[in-house]
Image 1 (tube, rainbow, N blue to C red):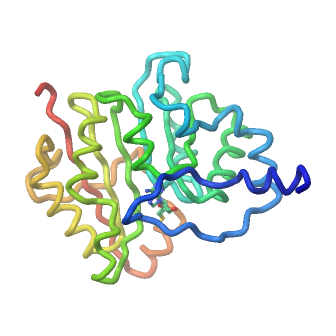
Image 2 (cartoon, protein in one colour; image 1 turned 60 degrees about the vertical axis):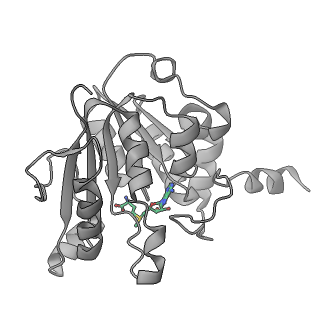
Length: 241
Ligand SMILES: C[S@@+](CC[C@H](N)C(=O)[O-])C[C@H]1O[C@@H](n2cnc3c(N)ncnc32)[C@H](O)[C@@H]1O
């Protein structure tokens, strides 16, 4: 095998075997630019499941509010947020290599130092890497809706997942979810309203206005033009247990 073949094989997400996954590994093409980003930018921005528990203070070289986003897709909105909020440190988790490549290239072009990325299954990252009580804001934007009823078990928002999120939040931290699929919004709300340790930050049973910090994505703009709705949900962990 040539050296080039070998480096190509390495652009793979990290995940442990599990019965049900919330994603499919897409064969998606990776552009030469995204591939080059892994060579040039991964050492600066990439984090690995295999390094185990993350020392956030050492990673970012400071103590700052921390935001964690699962499934950032192509990363445009996470990049915009990291630029808009330089006082906060951002961790993104995504299994789709082209999106990871695009985000780390964007971060390097913008000279960001407040962003790090896992190319891994978020469940494994939460289990193995993220310390308890370390995250101020948890973001889950437009997760795969898994439209068919027989696939609903693949939806990432389930009681066990939400409980994992809660343990990672600081007291008073926020879990922010958004979806453009009404049936998933209702499912999210049903799970979150009864999730131990969470309170609806707006009012029981209410959706939230989009907070200013969440940029509107191109996909969302297109949906709005077509008359599709978007539902934001904001839930807070108790200030003290
Ligand atoms: C529908 S896309 C939305 C992407 C982006 N948040 C947006 O708003 O455009 C959902 C993304 O979540 C990622 N994803 C799903 N389950 C994941 C998991 N367990 N760990 C990491 N990423 C995941 C998928 O690869 C996909 O890119």
